[in-house]
Length: 398
Ligand code: ADP
Image (cartoon, rainbow, N blue to C red):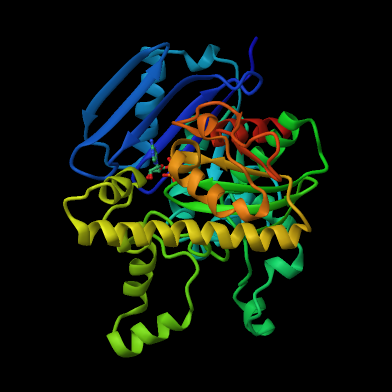
């Protein structure tokens, strides 16, 4: 029988799931439970081309998970005959404890709980999903796959902040990175795609959250996210890199509390803070709107800041890697925003990078080289698939 993995991504008010065949990468069924805890929630389940959507109150994760199992029962495929060999849970923060996937025992569960202060928005929500799913599917092994695991391999020189060592030790302050499942998956796929292991790679995971990593011969040597996903690139709503003294300034001069500054940096900054729009498609609309010059100019500057940040990371990572073979674009913006790819490539033209505008044009849903044959660096678009990566990692433990 085909072996499958049920992948669960439990958030604070949602549960996303996919039943995956890890061999072929096919998503056999998938769905999402949304607005858990609100007056009216929604469940969408897709199987064999049929989409079922239901609105009802979903007071908590347990009810949400029971609804998911009910939909599998009623709409298919029946889980008892679906060949499920593992349930794979996405977990954002694995701290120093997890350098790879882990079979969820009570001890592992408690370590994930201990790490809640490092990921206060994510780990508690993951735990809700893990607890309920372990309860309801107790005869199947559950595996946690951590966003930080890949970057546990970072060398000390890039994982350590130049912060007082004693303070860093006491509070476990270091660079953990994030999106590691995607960076590991993509860098591995790129090596297979190009038939080479000895690659100096830059992987750009550009979604609403965005991060870039430098990978040498399969090992990560640097990444842009740090203690939390706030560091690094300009994102949909996050500042990315910023002078930490801005925090002191806003506290002292603006009388803002730590929570207010946290919210400002994580939720009200980035492209949203600069333009009012989070989604890149909306930002481009502002840039192309000749009727409102003031907004247009602001949006253009925001895009320049976004591209320039990418450029800075390419420069510094190329130096760290001691050269560069390939830049890979992935995630929502990386796969779909051809203008971001083009503008970054054009900024790299002085270094012999040449983009093939025809190949770059449009949204790209399959692996594709978008540089010209004489480009100094290969430019590649490679769609990420974090669910498949989680399913594959879960399988390695069985
Ligand atoms: P996340 O998983 O972090 O929520 P995604 O990887 O799904 O993010 O990326 C979402 C982002 O991708 C959107 O906010 C939008 O900016 C961008 N995006 C999606 N489709 C397009 C498109 N056709 N053109 C430009 N940007 C796009």
